[in-house]
Image (cartoon, rainbow over all chains, first blue to last red; front, top):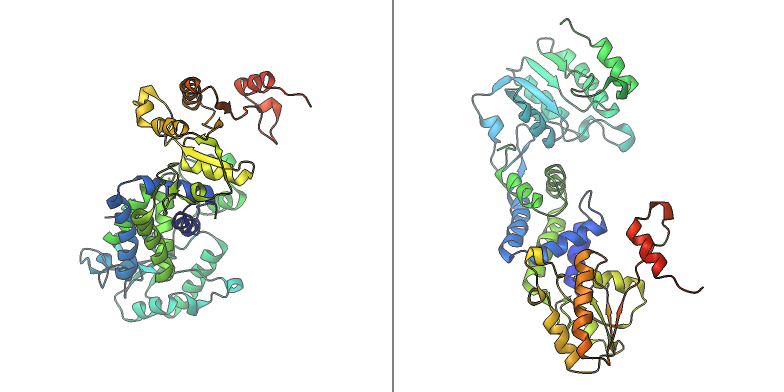
Length: 200
Length: 200
């Protein structure tokens, strides 16, 4: 025991398990929690317990939700003909923030990665195909990450969708990010930006 | 609402209040908690609740503890004649890790800082004097931080202790930290290192 309190040690150990939190940060957080009023610390603890008890995946899109279906699937103002396919629920947030997309989502919960044992059956590809086959979908925007796994997943989906020629399959544009310096762009990004050029 | 779950939003808001955690890190942690088994998340929540319910200050030294007095004050193998005065309970840990000190501690819970309204009555100076006056103390090692506030606190304690000439008051050495480069040492540290030089 390093502290004179095993409870403090236990909390530090639990906080250290969180992603991106080292031992020093965990200590700082634990001492912070020791200092704040009990109801503030209680709110954090209860928020964790409530989350685990009540938040689940949307039965339609796979997004996180505490209602079935989720608010985005239930929103009749959104266009059900366009599905945006993302890897994770956090990506839904990123796209929602752009306010550029008014369709619906499909969260894969991962990307194809054969070396990690992640094949089509480990992510929600089957559910995506079922949604397409139930009709009404005219476009699938594949917004998986611009990584090897994300690109492989996008290609795999595009190939599966050849069975549904009436559905357009698109991929979000890859190119130089806004506000960046060309000289700092990596080769592949710059090459993609050139091949993907558009009339102005 | 940015996510389709208000509970997730609520948890992210609570996590963002923690020190050193921004919105992005809070999101990552919240999604991590969503993914882990319920009992792992439950352990974290319960560790927070237990901490708030049962951890308090040691009635003698002010260190964090769930027993009265704390394990360090209760340990009869430690030398009660030497008190190490620190600003915060975290400093006790730092000193314990060195395994150089076998006396007892006194946690001030702060340092003098008149501009922030912290005077001698706002930190545990009175309790320190009471311990000295109850007898048995032969040395006080002042291990407050080497900052303006920590130095002022050390000087203040040294002055108070002039009423007890039998008690030696020492200050931890300030100098260049081990493993560092002289050229990167700041002026004040290097000046302290020179004036505090020792025979080798």
